[in-house]
Length: 532
Image (cartoon, rainbow, N blue to C red):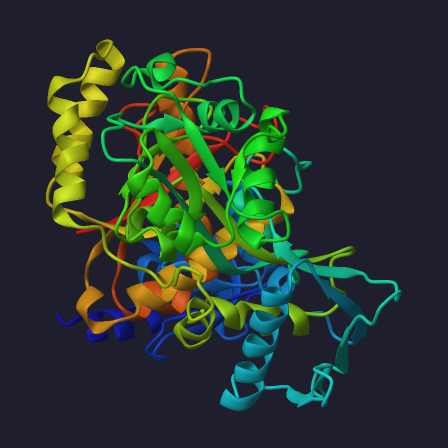
């Protein structure tokens, strides 16, 4: 019997009407064939029993998306052994719907002039492409007004004039420990009607060194020590016996400001007064190629002909090479996400919708023209993937990790990694903004015809100080929670493209990068996305 006939037969299994007692749900298939409103009263592992206004019907759980707060209620009660994984998706509409009625008035400032340019590019493209169901009016000074008559919502964003009070900022942030926790589970930020921080762009920096400085990599702490004048010879960090000559850009340059915020301030250090300053990145790149022992940090666009060093974070000794994929996946440590940050979370969903547009390919093309990385979802190269997996064959693992390493090699050997990478555990508002943009990129990537019927693997990595067994369990929990959140975020993509979602946790074995986060002591996990 065909699936269509199976569904037809299931829906015809009606009995006498019964009054509904619990909160009703809507069960709907993407093709529109199944649409049932009622109370879930039973589940046998395959079929749901639903009490409707015309009687009891049976519906295949795996072929429908469950809409409404009643879905969460029945899953939480666990009376029938029903979980969110039984459905094609779960959408608690009452939680994710935009607020009905409300107004936002925001005055925004910019930490650097280039950020103003990016803001204007995003809002201009948003207004011109008709991406919103709301009316969008852009004033001559760059102010923007949004209005949705259906929900009675309005939003006004004004560009701050000199001396004017502001309640929103466009600037770069660090994804290391410096912010309080805002969310403890992925479903919290997925279901939030508005986000206080949203990702607009991603800027990366290169560590360039003179020929002859042979190192496997450099850590962020070592880099800070060099610029603070505490490390003066390459032999101190495993290099040749050669004096170090650090070079830097002027104090008014954005790259110098980012070096301070990204490298020096987290280490509690300042740049030494005798560090040589040069006018621009091109001059520095040329000089580094000529001066023995020299080093500098420049924008990626100025480093093309230079030797670059892989960089590791503070919590591990796994240096990450500078590559397009490693930058947009967040694996490479020398990145600064550009965020719009509101003092208070917006009262409407209008601002969230507008700045979510920045994650799309149209806006990213405009933003990348200003020297930022295009973080539209990309696929990792086969050579990079194989280098990582081959390390599993020679790894030094305990008994728990050996089994996990074997499973990791088997499951990922024929899969391909996509760049969207998520931060789980206790996370800050900025990290939620990062995750939301990555989910939007992932949904767009998985909606293509080339992804139809594929398995999407949510793969978690955690370093737990209590031991490998705890790390493996925590990483598996993080991956499962992120998988469930994505079902809620993009049920139409999951069902419409017939995707199979699965999750795995591999603890701290063969992680792609250090597991640093904005929330100190937050036991963060990273969740990678692989497809097969």
